Structure formats: C-alpha cells, structure tokens
Image (tube, rainbow, N blue to C red):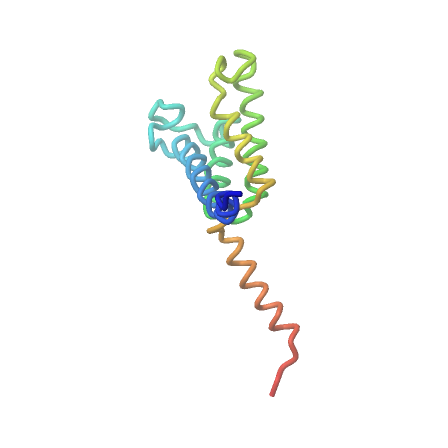
Length: 151
C-alpha cells in the first residue's frame, strides 16, 4: 500500500481552503466588474449595471458580498448557499431558453459557480477560514466562563 492517499488526506483541508479562496475571489470579481466597471465591466462592455436594475444589479451585489465572504471564510456555508442559488436562478432565467446545454447557451460560468458553491455548502470552508479563528476564540472564552475562578 502506498502512503500517498494518507498524505493527500492530510492536505485536504488546505486544498479545500485554497479552492474556496480562488472561487470566492473569482465570484467577487464578477460582482465588482458589474457594479464598478472594473476588470472589463458588466458583461465585458466596460460599463456598469444601473443601480437597482433587476436582476443584474442585485445579482452583482450578491456576487460581490458572497464572493468576499466565501473568499475570507466567514459564514462560508450560508454565503455559498446564497451564491449557488443565485447562479441557478441566473442559469434558468438568462441562459436556459437559448439552448439545452451550457455550452450552447453561454451558461457555463453560471453552472460552474452554482455547483462549486454548492460543494462548499457541504464541505465547509477548509483551512485558512476566519470562521475557524472565531470558533477558537469563542471556544476559549466559553471554557474560561465554565471554569471556577481560582484564588
């Protein structure tokens, strides 16, 4: 038997953490492009989505906020769930009518983000997440409250 699977298992939280950071950054970039006209702007036009325009502006806000939360690992599962749902909505409302498969209807990005975010809902944030830091800090505070004071 090889020791490689055991070593890969040990690296799993770190690989998952890096995966989460990259996916969150990419999702955040989509929102920033649509809201602020950076990185090519809304749909590569160099412009922005008008404030309050349905559904584009709201989708961009969701992308920006949930992308940031996923990237830093704060409320990862909840943020990823909202992001996944928004991408499912985007696919079925904006792409599905143009063809059955994502390759036919330009919906590949929506499908990929939907499924990668859904994966993070079930796997959690992995390593390097702020949630873990807060959990450790809260755990220490709760432990200190439970212990009787010594004099």
